[in-house]
Structures are given as C-alpha cells and as structure tokens.
Length: 137
Image (cartoon, rainbow, N blue to C red; front, side, top):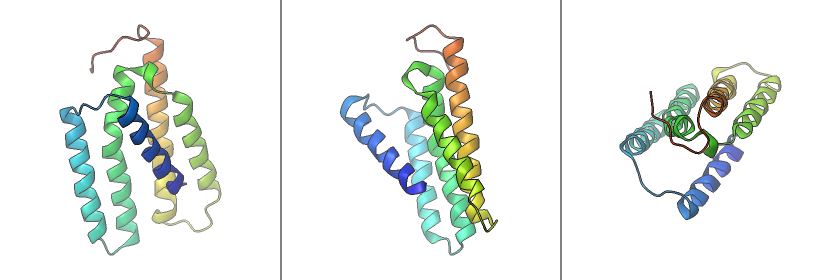
C-alpha cells in the first residue's frame, strides 16, 4: 500500500510540475522543509516504531498543502480518490495479523487524513461558487 502511495505521489508531482502551477508559496516551502527534516530524523532512528511514527508525522506535514488546496480550490481535487485510499486502508487494517504500532498506525492515519481531505472537498464544493478561489479561514 505504501509503495503504491509513493508511486501515486511521484506521478502527481511529475504531472503537476509538467502541467500545473510551479510556484511555491511560503506554506509549501515550510512543509517541504519540515518533511525533509523529518526524513533526516527518520534515517537516524534505530526503532521501527519510531520510524513509523516519523513517517506518519512527515506525511501529515506534507498533507497540509493538499488540505489548503482542497479548501481554496475544491473543484481541482477529486474526493473519490481520497475515499478510495481510505477504503484500501480499511482493508489493510482487516488484513493485519499482528497488532503493533508499526502495522496499524499507517492505515489508521491514512483513513483519518484521507477522509478529512475528502470531506473538505465535498463540503467546500457544496458551499462554494464553482471555479472560484476561496479564502482560507
């Protein structure tokens, strides 16, 4: 599941860089820096549990720009993608045989984060004018 997520993210970055907006906002820079610091700390850990916790925190920081984008431009995101990722994470949880933080924390986190992003998209689509950027509250 994580490998597919990495490939999906890489594809989005490549397509976004090729066809999208290449500007970096301050928030993007701060989140990228935070993720890089987290990757450095993750490399230093000698504990699988701490490494998984670091991975979740890094992903959480990296998800902030997606949440902001979904809030501002809800019609540029596809809520179904995030719902499907949540469902796949649920199936991952159902397949867990050994309950340790290293096995259940990532899929639980993915369910929560992707559900939140999907809800932000759906709610903002419902209450916004189509195609217009919305102010961050």
